[in-house]
Image (cartoon, rainbow, N blue to C red; front, side):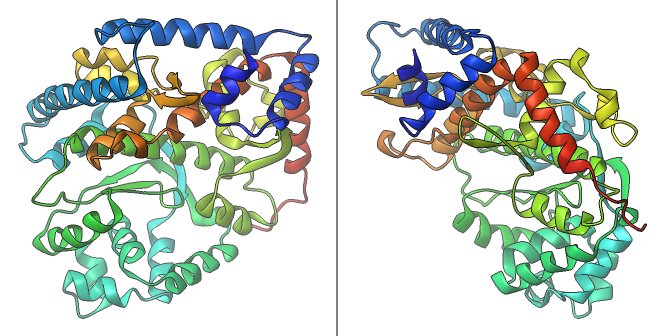
Length: 409
């Protein structure tokens, strides 16, 4: 059983096996790994049957082709559903409408617009100004949403410019942030279309998420649109919104720490982590967010309140959102951590892996699996954190990281 999980995860052996043994011991030999392996086998078998494939005689390339064909069909249905709901034929506008209206939590703890403007003014984005056709920074601020300007600057300015901007975050305080809903921006002018034509072809995506701004920016699509681009745009934006919510919760929790600005930097450039380790990996804050989103009764008010409440700890299922928007996409429910092993290597059912590979027209040998592996990793750890002794170990580390002298606000 351990071998199957190890191969599905692409884990480092023998470290993975040793770490799993320690978790088993800490959880009272719960056999969570055995139960998860059985669930994976059952789930994979069911999905193969839904695809019309033989669960006992399907190769990796056969599954890869079937998932691609399924997604292309589902993408057409999703396009029609989104355009009907938004009463707009433009794909990006339809996706933006769905993101603003689908019933998921949207509140976040993000930079105030006035602060974001000051930061951008100190690091003048000259290339972005030129591309968007503005002669003055003030004129650009007047006509463009601040989230869109950050997107243009992040894409067009140099690496040193981006480094200088993030360096400014060290001086941020909790009072520079506010609670509000996540912003979804979708600039669509001719200048933005020209920018997107250059950038999307190079970067291979049109979705940018800014944790510090609490914003998702959708770039216009190029004239020659790749296959399944609607699905790819929607699911990447939904994933970004989950990440923004998780980062937001962590920042709220750390808002009284004296090094709050440095924490903002870490959250923006990387993923917040605890000093505790499970399976030789640091425990990510996203894992904590997902745990309390799933097991709401486990919420510990003495650790999290008054800065965050139980309702802050949410994590929406991308697959369930898709099914809500277009019921025929129910096939993807429960696939986020499923994979088929072929020649000891995984073929991912995860819709983000499938959509990105399809969008970029990747051959089987260059398939994407890391979103599915990340989901499986979280699923395995979630099963162990549910045991009191493991949960207490993780929470004690969380408490120790949060104990500090209050920041001067």
